Amino acid sequence: MTEATPAPSPSGAPPPGRYGRSGDARTNRRLTVIGSVLGVAFLAVIGWFGVSYVGGTQVSAELIKFDVVSDREVAVHLEVRKDADVTGVCTVSTLAEDGGGVGRADFAFEQPHSRIDEVVTVRTTRRATTARLVGCTAADGH
Image (cartoon, rainbow, N blue to C red; front, side, top):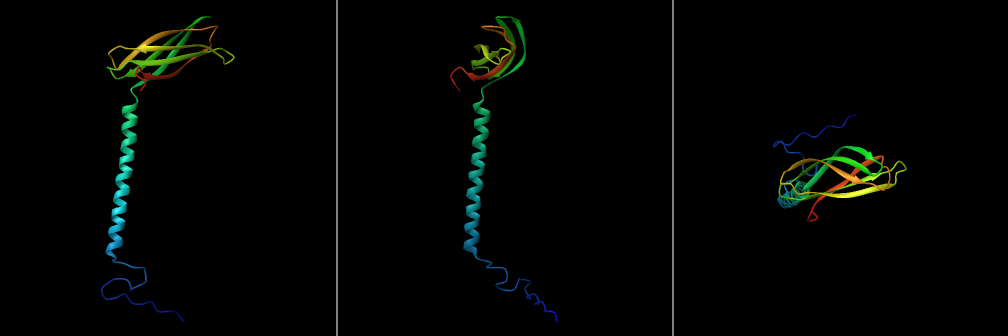
């Protein structure tokens, strides 16, 4: 024998009690308010991250190439990007073949341009085999 399926109600609504409570306006309103508050909070956090990412990075650079000039010098070609009214300071370090640090220098970029290509010289205590850009910041520390 097979069980008979109940016929749908004339209004097209599911049988009462079958799928939980429906039509509780207070619960629906509460869920809507909670969802809206969470949505606004999520958008605020995303906006804050975006502004801090874009606004917080005032100076950046890329080490284009380096050339070991002698046992005591390395020429480093940097491409610096910054706001035109900001003085940028970039730190470059050099390493010897054994991985030990043999030189480190900070270079200030005060030019009123937003993109600067410049070759700087790092003095070393012995022959370097590589150079690396440690990082850049604005002169005021931001």
